[in-house]
Amino acid sequence: MNSMQSLRIIVAGQIAQYPLGGVTWFYLQYLLGLQRLGCEVYYFEDTGQWPYNPTADGLTKDPSFNVEYLAGVMLRFGLENKWAYCFPRQSEWFGLSQKERKAVIGSADLLLNISGALEPPEDYRKVYRLAFIDTDPVFTQVKLARGQTDFRKLVDAHDVHFSYGECLSDAVPATGHRWLPTRAPIVLSEWNPSAPHRDVFTTVMNWTSYNSVTFQGNTFGQKDVEFKRFLDLPRMVAPTILELAIGSGKNERTPYDLLVHKGWRLVDPAQVCPDLDSFRTYTESSKAEWSVAKNGYVVGQSGWFSERSARYLAAGRPVVVQDTGFSSVLPVGEGILPFKTIEESVAAVREVEENYGRHAKAARSIAEEYFDSEKVLRRLVEEALTSNR
Image: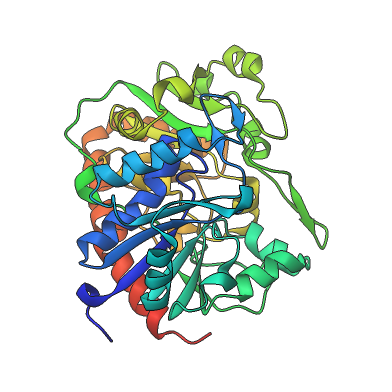
């Protein structure tokens, strides 16, 4: 196989689609990580969707803000001549010219379609290998098993398939694909464990992301389903402060008044972590993370582990997070403290408070051993180029 230094790789994502700090960091870890491995990296965004403009609080038919945002991110990290964005109105492209895009596609060794962001993968078939990166395990497999034809066509257009569901349980339906395990890559040098922190547990979340899905009598829901089981947690762990940077639910309105009444501290993510730098500062200024998972992840016990939580670990911040089966692939007990019940959650928060230094040190060590972009992406690229369907 070619050395990493000789590889040309396209990363497909949604940085311009959702110009928000957390979303940008998610895709940027792939770009920077591959760049540091010595690969020639390009970023393509061709989602077929109208972009979201946070300054206009909704979808927009004017891509100016989104294109400027993407161009600024690419310039900041030395990728100013390595990106292309397609605005769906008449397939209007920005960044690389048509000639340059065609040349890159025709010579690329690998395209990583992260979260299925690339809507027409068949248009990129001249790339040597197309890899689908499933970052929403359980829901991805249920959609395929339910017979959603367009989605199956999209997934099937790829040569190799990876999933953040590193140990998909029997509760997850088979799809006919070979799902290779992978996880979120983190560029460790971007996260500073020595940054000062507040005496607050935090997380960044949405109340809901999309509707629950049902398959063969099983329902796979969103975070709101699980969170309701832990509403009384602030009172039970007082004086520890639990803070949520929480957006409004897309399908069910976030119950702000109820959460405040129950003792949760609420902040607006649009105010505290809207961009790259403020998102990183918010993470690093936290003492630890506390978070539930989507109900579907809990039911499916897929081993999914949040890329957001991985960034907390890289910042040397312990994470108290709901168990999705990840203990079979990640070390738990120090740095990562999983819980299933509210009683286990209380015990984990108290354990972090009582032995913070030990858990903070373990958090960074886990990030270095299990989420280092060099290790994660080297394995991903090697498997993507050599694995059979």
